[in-house]
Length: 190
Image 1 (spheres, rainbow, N blue to C red):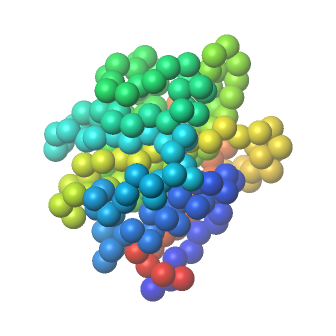
Image 2 (image 1 turned 90 degrees about the horizontal axis):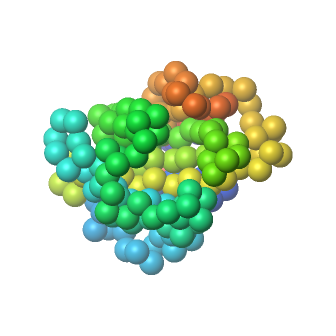
Image 3 (image 1 turned 90 degrees about the vertical axis):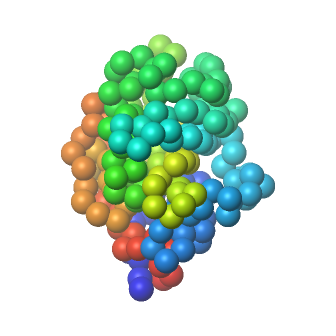
């Protein structure tokens, strides 16, 4: 089976997506225990890991928060939940994370907003993981700040893209998003 997709603007995110695909088996998201902390070393400063608690409308708890994210956003969120975020941030993230849980596929997008008093853009990648092969109980989220040059080079597509399916409309605060990416089946090889 083949996988077709356009590269993400941030090479580190492309590498993380490739890594996630190697850990996916039989079309299912990776089992968290198949990923050692050392495996994530190239991305460790730019990732957050969420524990997902509850079946329907889950609670998302930060169980890891990288140093670059602390520096970018001014504080660690370790141990906090999405409910602890300001309402406007939660309104962007909650639907995105619920979509990843429901679709069981990654989502990538560019988000532009005012952080620390200045407008900044981050390319984000949200990757699902499943301990039992059925329910998504962890999310691996990576975010890299984009330079003005990277932003200018992006194609004019709005919103986020489900990696493996339909392009979603723009989320609140979203800037030009990735070119639609398609992963026909997690774990497929080129």
